[in-house]
Length: 214
Image (cartoon, rainbow, N blue to C red; front, side, top):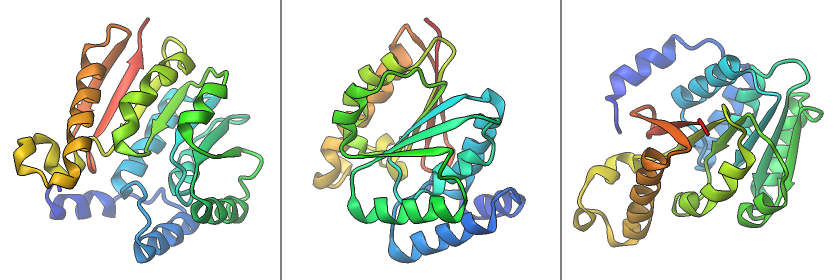
């Protein structure tokens, strides 16, 4: 937990922008232990979409469709969202949720491994949301930069890994050390890549916001 629980509960209590459908999806995801974005992160995504007003959004990591639906709440008229998911169970639920939300025309769900699918996409995408396997963030970056136009925004979730990222690798459970190292490499690249201007935010489980500047 990056921010204390009381603060999060208070801030979330002020968020009335979430639809009943999204609340139901979030509740079921919690019950089924499906990893979706935290509520405060979802609200931030919606705000960023409203600010950027993207015509094309790309999401890597659909899960059951919660974050895609939240972003769609702020999509401008004619805006489209493409999302990628490889797990069959999540794909089935996401499709059902998109249908319930009457967003089937706005959302295109691509089924398969993002490492393969990203290479086939032409873009450009005005906003990209990365919420997939954390150990693969750095390996995705080259393709994501190709798909972003100058002025495009890349948002990456879970960058602080429940606070583990700031710990020494020896204080991190052995099973998480590879991801710990790769995430640190990813954040270093975001902050030192001359094509990007990046801010790292202690929001939810940590969020990075990168703008392609050249």
